Image (cartoon, helix red, strand yellow):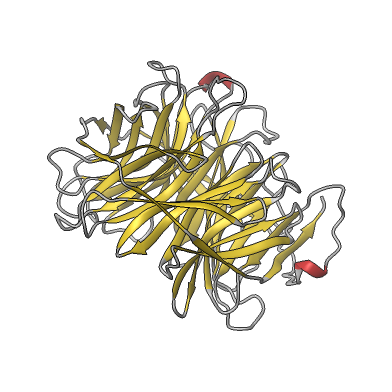
Length: 491
């Protein structure tokens, strides 16, 4: 591949400033830009997902992830206002389990709260969905059965399905969850899972999908809905990975997987060639504007099995099908870069439609920085400024998720810096930017990029129908810890 090099003059670094958010009176008229941390001493808190809050009172943002305590793990959710001050923070033990994790969260359009998913150990490991109010109080929790005893189910992403034409009053909306089931046998085998249920906690359907003639199977990591050419309701479109061989560590390929709203397969694409390079998709967004309305963009990484540094990998797929139209690869000039999430930009100041992806730069030179790249929808090449974050950190931070926030962006991941000097080396990390992806501590990213043309294959997936769902209780535990690692910026 021929890579085009983009090197930019580094912006001056603003001095690091660590303050307690609760003691700062921020102007109420306009949200500001900042980088902040949240968690609880002395737990290790890993942020996995972020959403802008648009329907609950007081708006703001919400971050979900997992905290590791001395006795196990708990789901952790932090809700903040538009200036980063925590409104509440709760840990959750699903079914009382101290082996509870959270990977994704979604806000419900009716303004009643949020739903999150992850995994919980109850003899075996199961996918769960937890509904909470706008104030973080549990409403209901559902656990989903596995295909076999000894398997391990994990929920990785959750969305609220598009509203349907319905009588008044409308029925409860529906939730779509994707994840994995690590099978008890054969060793290393994984099935992709898609679950559909109502926001009132009622079961709709549950499916496990695999790959024929491949012993290891599929991983599902992110989900969206997009326009269907064969049904009234939109299709479910999934991003993930497909194993090609006998080990996940060699020759994984990027997976785009599409089903009807009923779970019936539409098509799929497995991108890559028979070699020792791994491709993975971790994030997905649907396009709704411009010339590419109805198409989907998937992001992830490509990395040779023998190479230390991955490169960010972007692909745009066509409407109603699974054909890759445009692909590109982005490389940091000195280290590795992986894209974990992507949104269609609705706040960009650029003239052309764009997508904005976030991820993490890490390698031998840089211990870790988050990044945000802006790619032109047409060629998935650079448009406008490209930036990296956590530049004030003496160690490293990660970014795993991104969302539009009306006139700006929010991104979330984890800190790996003891900002308060109290032995708490990992917290939720939240970045809120202006429309151009900037805050006080941002600096421009030096990178190269190139178009790519990886070939693709298709397969017909075997399907298992699952029907087991159980209602359980969830215990919430109040938590509190917060501060700025990059000061408020009103500009």
